[in-house]
Image (cartoon, rainbow over all chains, first blue to last red; front, side):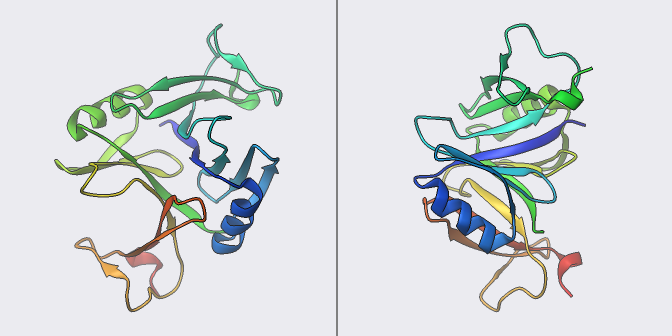
Length: 100
Length: 100
């Protein structure tokens, strides 16, 4: 069964909202800069994203090799974006340790 | 550390989108009617919700007793809705087995 890796929601102030989610729900801050943040819960991650920098989306961790047209990120992950049939953005994500 | 229980995203056709997420990502359908659906991944759940019936939100599984003003749902869970500082809707959720 595929894992939901993270859900990304919009934030108008990454620093402020990172602190709020950390305090309100005890999430641990995995990464934070001015354009986005990643917070860890014991199930999936919560990402905070700045409108115009990254889209709000739900990210699914895929198995196997990423396709050749997948985008390689600086942290070594690969991803592709798509849309579901209601127009929500979904991310297909391949992490280092899931790439054979 | 708090668990993200589920993420709920909008759907203009619950039946069609439930089938799509099930086929595209191998999620298992836990519940489905005409107004919403719940699909299981190996981390958090994905909920599909009809605009006007339920808001899109991220749901956090809380520990301890639900507050007295929490809403009791037919399945025995309790919840409250709130907003983060960027206007996203968050749900505080208490499940039967997490209520002491």
